[in-house]
Image 1 (cartoon, rainbow, N blue to C red):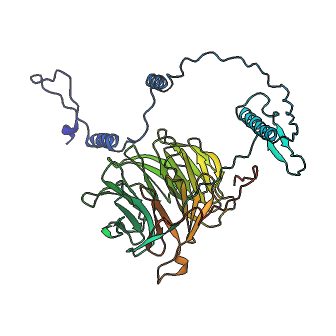
Image 2: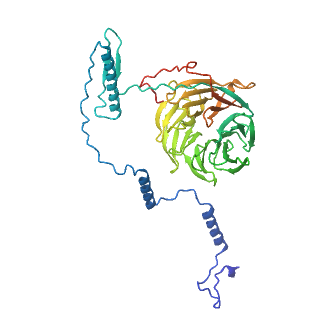
Image 3: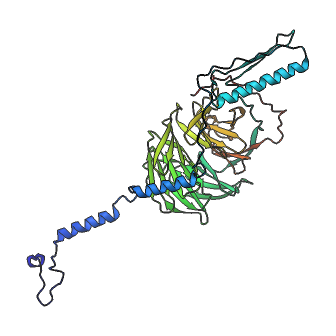
Length: 488
């Protein structure tokens, strides 16, 4: 053995032209094999490659040329004639007249001047801060007065009339709490997941059960149907993320990585990317084809309870029990904004289908935000409804619905926050009164049907009352004085 492990030189007859060949010991070869195996299989292939300066400059130049070529060459700025320290214009006096036509003319001219002052103050015109005008008109022999104030005027739009919603159908079939619901793109059926560890597909028109899918070993907490592929994704408290093929009704992929129960999931509308969140306080981004984890977005300090995805920034929005909402940059793999306005855990998020806005729900209030910076717009409820909100949904008619843990369903006008209808769900016979809870809700693709998943193991279908009119259900709305809105 000693001669075999010693260096071997070839004879002069068959001498190797490259040079002498030295055989390594068994230990050296095993270590070399370990090293190659580690390099091939244990390297972090998901890590981000370093940026190349030349490629980065070329990419930025192409992006600037494609997106900003319209404003590339602008004319030079015009000099400002007025100075910032100009004195405010004195208020225009309005004389009293007994002629009726003169009175109407004075009223119209005063209101026109006030609107002009409003536009100047909004546009940042010189003297906007001190150019507020006050026009007062007093008819002769009357104590009434017409007072119009310029500057920051009252901007309180009247809420749009919406018909109240009523219960249309009750569907029973699950043996546990119904936790999630999702519609398919053609709006023919919907799927629900429940605490009985099953997924059930229901026909929307008739409410009949089409098929029951089993595979989870713990309650199912989230489900979503792809608009681009015949796939359905489900998550549960068993740490599993499953991909179902709807053509053969079988699981074809598993996504492993979560350290605890998975509570929510969302599909990117334009990319083959799945986002999931759960009790491990992280949002994980998966490639649905290769099953690889693209990012593990960490930053939350508690359970991630709700997720939203969209094709533009922020492409991922997450709400957590740590009472924060985070906006994530999908390209960089990190959060660029954290919204801390809520005082309680954020369990519900809803994206407006046509506007660049989204809403968040917590036990303290419902809030509206503006994308992409996450600018706070307003509180939906001027008088907060003290209950835990579990779900929210918005349709194209600006109807926002919120489902609460006490069984309340509140329908709100999106623009003004006016609560035009509140419904209290009724538990099915044989259930406890404490089981009146709403876990999830979703509008269908047309926005005319609402599905609620409830704690009494039922699925309820709601629709608008076709017999309701503005006369039978008038708007009882009281305007809120400006400056009294709260940010909490």
